[in-house]
Length: 338
Ligand SMILES: Cc1cc2nc3c(=O)[nH]c(=O)nc-3n(C[C@H](O)[C@H](O)[C@H](O)COP(=O)(O)OP(=O)(O)OC[C@H]3O[C@@H](n4cnc5c(N)ncnc54)[C@H](O)[C@@H]3O)c2cc1C
Image (cartoon, rainbow, N blue to C red):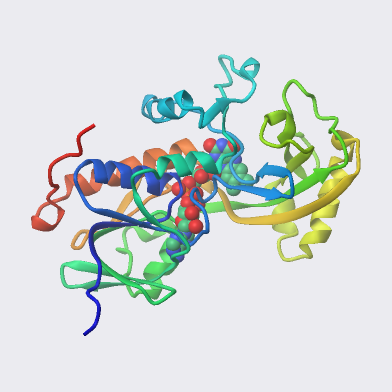
């Protein structure tokens, strides 16, 4: 006899900050929630990597909390030491306090995933309507049924999944969704032979000209014992060199960074973020593309290019699903005691 297909109330695709926040909110409302992510770790673009002893944040560099709800989300993480401030002296009327993950950014996502059912290394490859539900297929042959779906991948990936599944987006919504555009970012993670020349009071610079948008010293930042820098190329350089030899692109960026490094590079790796940050985003915080069964698109494509914006999108997606729950399938059970 075939094994029964696992069923859940809501299936969230993506364990980045938007998916985790949406999942926590829905679970808090009493729904059964399952999160699937194709990555090996939590966090999506809240990403960290090691090269030997050296540690790097190679996606988002820090979090800022401008809205009260995001500040409240971060509060317990600040209390338990998952978030620590990165250079208090930098905060001021025009620059909010920067928070970094401890030991690195992916720890933030790991902490937000506590208590959630998240399956990593589970890539969603297919989606189809099955009566009043969605049937979600994974690349490894798994199948789940669910009353509702929240897709939080970078928007072009969500639209591609919908297209390949024959779930068309309503015509009226299509132009705005297709207008969303992301910058690319080539990132270099370099282990140095000694301490860098980056200003030690700040530990990062944003050059105003040349191919580099950002250089951060991960040792000054407090995440690496070994001298190590993260370099982010500008969108223009990243686009121009996207299809070229990545190691060569990395070398060009290291050459451009030489005045800030002041020492040799022991080794380096290059990572390409195809969907780095939205350059053009959708004005709504999330979009419902199907009512019955419900399917919501969320993530930083909706609202802005920062982790905080992605979190607000996740909350908006959860609220939309909870508002729209009509039939027995979306009715929440008792709320989780705090
Ligand atoms: C280089 C760089 C620097 C940045 N710097 C900052 C910064 O300093 N401060 C800041 O606030 N923001 C920064 N950002 C932006 C911030 O990282 C993002 O806005 C935010 O993390 C997006 O979260 P998300 O949940 O919307 O998407 P993501 O984090 O991309 O999460 C989507 C998840 O979906 C998963 N996924 C995709 N396809 C599938 C599939 N088929 N099946 C299963 N899972 C799938 C992915 O693995 C991923 O984990 C930066 C981003 C980059 C790339």
